[in-house]
Length: 349
Image (cartoon, rainbow, N blue to C red):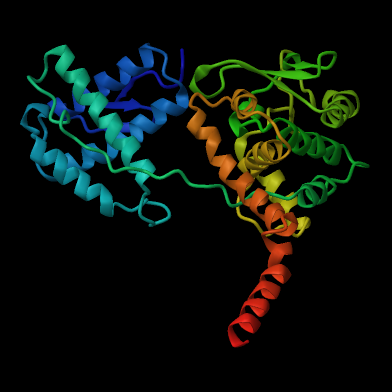
């Protein structure tokens, strides 16, 4: 049984850490029913968690206003909730949530009310006319140079077991542009040394894909598997690729810590961690002439627009090259000055 399954203890309902009070209002029951339906159709743990957070915020807002029955909610209430989210602050960081987070929560709310409409609990969803604010695509600014990458990769001490493991991790992030959660879930059998590729199982959107991997990354992976991993294995049946000294699969926080430590020791002050390698891989490939469709496939982007944000970074590099090499750009300034001088002399003669 998956850990997200609904649990009932002491008259309270628990789902993914979402504890509702035992009064069993219509709002409580329908939210839990919706979350269970999402679990049954195979939503990922990550998606379920996001939906739970989104609906918990909405639940708290509704309860404060006495809106305990979904049928009572009108379009006006939904618009009021949208205004509330524009000022909502993260309960941990105390910073205002961004448009992406707000839109994600509102999409969950719309999905929830459409579910209630389909089930016949309400006549009409109050979210049908809801309009989401447009979100701009953020251009990555934390792209590393090749020199910075090499400096980061050289940080781990290859004379130690942890150094070999950490070097293999960094090489894999850089070589493949893989996502953090995808790397965390890799198993030994997902590495194909003969064909120089790795198999990503159920990446974002629960889609599988194959990614090519460099010879250098394979070298460090092979070194890690032969000299380090076996010494970390405790018991049998553990096929996770990267293990801690205790024999457990390395978790996201540990992987992020490894990358941040390498960044700090390399003297790289750019913000970011594991995703920085993903930005860098995509940008450098495009700068070196890779077809954007291949980069899209490698990164596992469903939408080509997600990949195109990296072309803006590559274009900045192209502009630098252009201005330093094209006669009518940077190199043509002296001709422009000469033309201005000649023009001035002509006017005065």
